[in-house]
Image (cartoon, rainbow, N blue to C red; front, top):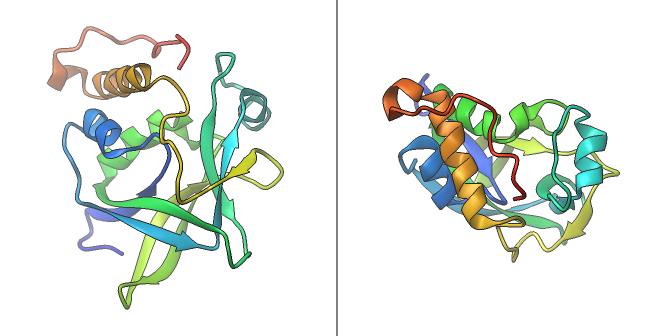
Length: 176
């Protein structure tokens, strides 16, 4: 899992595409797509998000992906495993609603290419969301351009001194 004490592996899915991650971090971390058995992909509606994360300011029609364990032999999800440092992980966590009640983060272990692999994964609890195809899914459930703008604003909030950003307030509340 850990190449050195400064990095770790993190598994992304949904809107955390290479494109969004590059906007968020200002760089493309080393990554690899893998198919992981024993997980299912769900779409969380606005109602699910508000039930899980009561402080969420969620626009109507907004949806998110989540993954959760599923022991069915047919359940699997395509993930992008990235090598991140602690600061990069923090930016991703902020973009992902700060993990507060919406996602739980845990370390998952598996064998990949005949080698042991461990990575952090954000999951959602059972009882929420609608199960969808975890292998073939559209990454952007919401407006792509607005998703990219929110990613840029998240980065600017995190690095205002590096980006010359003047944006310090809350992220866009437009519909995603």
